[in-house]
Image (cartoon, rainbow, N blue to C red; front, side, top):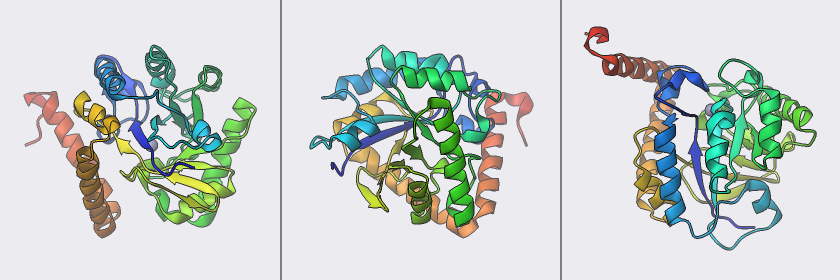
Length: 277
Ligand SMILES: [Zn+2]
């Protein structure tokens, strides 16, 4: 089994700055969404840096690689996966991983059952992103964790007619217990958001890190990441750990402060009339 992989974490991709047209709503969700034209530039930059086409989780599990494979993942299950992302990946004959939030299936801005089935038919990987997308997954009880993974995996298995083996942790809020519960629900490969290329096993489930691509990140950063440049990983690692410390110290207050700051920024960016003084 390979123990290293470069996994990119995207969220929604929407046209013309229509951030509220796909996925979770609000300023804190929007910072993770890319414009279609911007996403296309990221794919082009990645394509120029790749030696091998991106692989998939199931392919990795079935056939370990000695290379440093690249995987492309999308969290939340927003409808932009079916409307834009899959087409853009397929222009390059690439496959994506789409992690779906169970309770959002078929609701406004999210994939419905037919679209999930269609993405799967086109060869993309469908995985669980929990049932309810808890804000702080690692703080859930074992009972809640079991319910989150079981319920979402069962829902998706019923839609696709086959077991769900791949998942990603909502909010990147990871603990060993999160992986233990995922494993009990039949998950064999669990992505968290730790900005690392290494992986480890928890109760028969392979846990892999990822590096997030946010709005405003230049395509050259994505190119450097897949080319094996360590600098973006180090920067992200320092940022991620500073965020973890803030979360641990402030808990729920950190989340509220973050939402407030982002809402202020959105209003300020919208123009002087809506500026908060
Ligand atoms: Zn998420």
